Length: 160
Image (tube, rainbow, N blue to C red):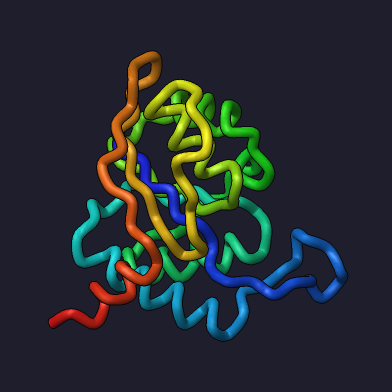
């Protein structure tokens, strides 16, 4: 299974109701996420499914990705706050060959680290609107296929 982990775009510091869950993408976050999604679509496998955290900024990010990739995102509650082990367990129960997850830090970096090293921490840092792709087979050592910063993805979007 290929798993793409796309961190949500730049979000406001406080949501309209003051909660973390209601934080929305800023206008710059929307723009940069659209550009990153366009860049990603130029080289990445098209996932069979986009699974997103239910938090507002992640849903907005997933909707942008879904519009770019012609997919309707599905909410997966475990992506809201992790932990990484619960996200990995959820993946082990999926049957798709290529899955995109939209969510948050530090859970996504921890997922990449646990799948690829079975425990080493601190070597991956997911930037907002950045994406990592890992090859995942439950019970086996995973492989980091690629890690793309948002700047790299945006540059691909404008490349002719």
